[in-house]
Image (cartoon, rainbow, N blue to C red; front, side, top):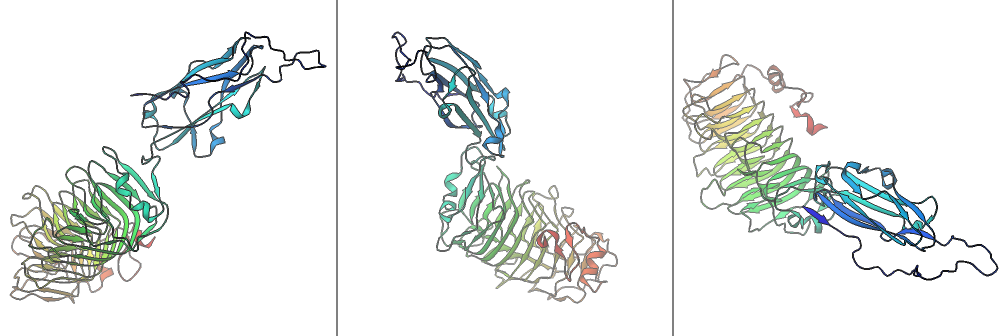
Length: 543
């Protein structure tokens, strides 16, 4: 779309002597005519802001000669970009055109107009800041230095990747939702730590129509408090489509009733757009009091209530939270579904629900968890609903039969886990009786205590597990397993068990008495895990 921004369209009122008059430039006592007072100048000077979001601009530049008695030549010179700052790049000559570069004034000329057109701006790198400085020069007449230069600054509109909003105060952070734009990603950066003490936060709705890229740049948001909201989702973001990264939430307090709930977001991602959370740490409390049993409005997680979509992920995040929920809760996420993933994350803290509980995720549906760990007490009490509990995930299943798999790999847990029904140190219930849709491998269940109130199908590594795939897992030989009515299940004789066809739970190997020895026996990647201490830690959290 062509955009015209004329610098001057109205008639100018020049303070000039008409060229039809006789001008006497001599002074008493001088015999010669001098032209020292004749100057060239730009009628328009100063700075102009242009945006790379627009393909084209057109300007009319007016060059003025103060008197008409002398012929003159003038030209436009391009100013070095670095004179405006190291952050600027000179606008390529291919992206602008001057009607003429050299101007010839006859003796009776006092005004010339020059057209300047900027074009194809949307093809430029929108992460850069460009500049074009034009300076009027003449070899045979003086140039008015105060009126000699025009400077055009070109970058994305504020909120673009090359010109993000910079937020440094709580009052501006509270306006975050107002910055979001239809049909494009809005880029936001924190420029300082922000304390939300005394503010009841309203969740920001970053939808598929209004996605966001929110980068904390290593800063912290403290004292986030949410007690009420009309949003379907409860968190700093209600719905997060886009990205939240590089920020710490400290001492957050989030409470809700009948909502998907988390500190970062109620839900991250959906069928229309991905939600990504990376390099984020949270601490605080979450309380979710849902009414009747309902997966769609009763799930809580330290990071988010639900993670949804094949391109959605939570990566290198930590949760140190206390979570209570009437229905379902996980240390990182309540529910992970439709191909989403949780990678290189940890949870430390206690979780209490009346239904399904997991140290990382409560429910894993056609999705994956890898390289994660959990520590704390996981309880589904008073166990009014017969659902499972696991140190990593409580309920695991494909989305539709065995066509969409779920997998847990390279994870460890030392959580105490209690639930009404199926319990496992890593996974509680593989909800796929047809088999081949769920895989657990290279995990270590180093829990000290597992309790199932009445289920006959609980195990050290996995509870109910009919005909799915499990291999290369170890379990704590000193683990106390309280499984009423659980038939005896011998330990696996080999680390590579393969498909389980004759039993309904998986105990793993109990042949190693030390957690770190078990981890090393499984050859965990030391670029991901730090194995120098008494317990495995993720390398990124120690950097």
